[in-house]
Image 1 (spheres, rainbow, N blue to C red):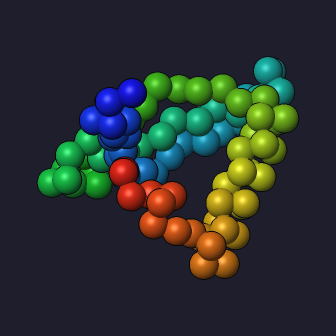
Image 2: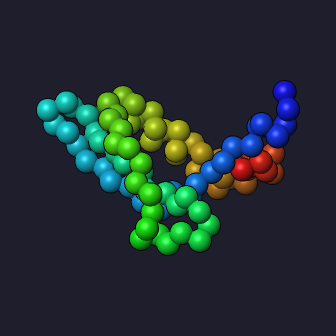
Amino acid sequence: MDRKNDIIHTHPLVGWDISTVDVYNAMMIRLHYLNTTDQATEDAEVDRTLWLTTDVAKQLISILEAGIAKIESNEYQERDHRRH
């Protein structure tokens, strides 16, 4: 595989809208992100609305907590992020 095709383009997350949707026993989330390096936070792009069940939300929380713990424990290495 050509390594040039392995580049993952990333966008800084700068906010979100999250609310519960009681009739569906779910949550709604929309992420706000910057599309360019010179874009002001107040002009952030707002992504599509996503629905999360409580099970998926719990999995997301667990994954985020594990990632934070890894970073804070200094196990985060150059190879984990060098191509972003």
